[in-house]
Image (cartoon, rainbow, N blue to C red; front, top):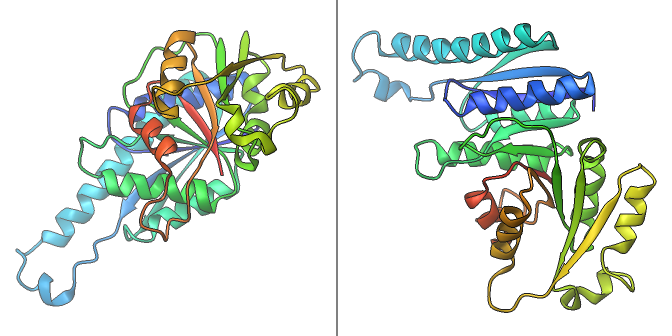
Length: 279
């Protein structure tokens, strides 16, 4: 991992993303590109005529001020940490920004985004950013919970393994983040429901693959009938004290009405642990 992208804005939650990006850069001697967004006004001319004089200029200044504040905060933190960094802005309409962010993500190793806070304004836009980064960049996304925690020495990672291609992609993308951990757990839930996706001992094959990278993982197999799989995963994360979940981004194209499947969607809403996802 040598090239990290982080989405910048002037929210308090962005502090957690910056801190995560800088921490990863320090561990991997990586470059961090901080990208801020400047949303262009798309108000039609016939509506603009009814707006107060100077409205567009005030709106433009507010957008520029917000982006500058986000970049300045990132630059200050990056300078203090002594990492390699660069900054950029995307100045497009709200409809075009997600695709533009995916373009930037396509040329880095990993993109750091914030968890969507469904209780705050802008949730639809932030969801569109996440979906574009996942489905259109070909790169993994590292999601940071909006409830930030103090960064501690890396310890336990949990891999949600169901034998699928998406899960396999996420595991390979996560290898640089797994190599310095004290404990890696491959969590297999209800393996009997996907017998064709597993070998004789579910989880053992991917554990053997990781061992070639000096990643020693143990397999935990669970059968749950009284709770949903997403709840079982969230409970396991809490019980194990994990500081990273690795999983495939189970879902569909952004052109469909609902991007993510039930398990993925519920985990993204309730996550309190960083999640690395690949599609």
